[in-house]
Length: 231
Image (cartoon, rainbow, N blue to C red; front, side, top):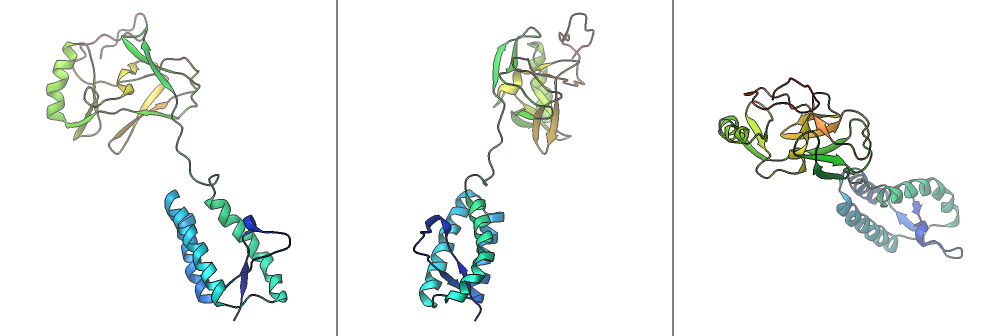
């Protein structure tokens, strides 16, 4: 039977090497677990499978004989794969959560409240999603009529069926003002509306995007002096 030796370098001592011998059939089972642990499973599952893998390898080592001296020659090829395996399971190799730019709500020179970035934002960065209750167009029309009387635009069309009403369950994105020459743009993915940077944005700048409204055009645009557009 061909044997392969695997040594956990994290616990290696200069005067003592622990040899783990794995048979062919066992190698196939363990390799399958490694593929799942490294390529598919989330962080918690990876750690669990790693512990199970170590336990299975130790059990095989107790049942099988230890390698002889000439078996150690085959270990060098295995070490590289083991190092890669532990690197993938380490925290450095784990996927990290996307960093969201720090934002703040402040009084705006454009209109009422505005949203400002506290740090530089690179072009095309996803800044924030436009949250709000998902309603149909019939309900949206009823609500928009009331909002427009107060000079507010809260409803954002997602598709032919759905609209996001930021006045209900909305977030900070509801305060991002319109501008005819904005520094951001909107992008719809599924039912999620993302506000993304249209260019590199400096810390302290107010975020704006084009509303592209197609309604009553009852609100005067205030993005700059002399702008004749209506929303």
